[in-house]
Image (cartoon, rainbow, N blue to C red; front, side):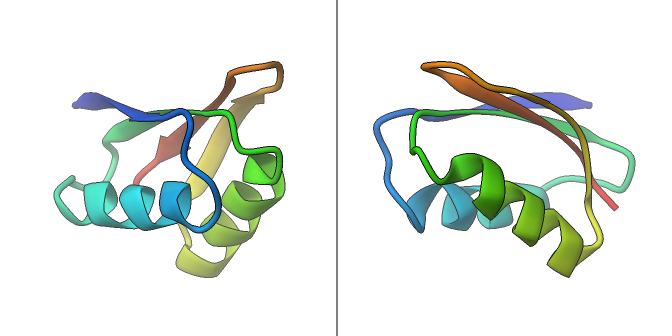
Length: 72
């Protein structure tokens, strides 16, 4: 299953809070795509993935950043 999570216009720590809640509703192997505009999002999502064991498969920068996460 794949899910899109819109975290645009949210500032730290809200994108990570919303990601954590979304992942709890998903199964291992599912993919979560997150869009965010928080300048710290890239570092935050990488640290979150490292701490939780979920895999950050892809990250696209820009005005709207996009992280693709595989749920562990």
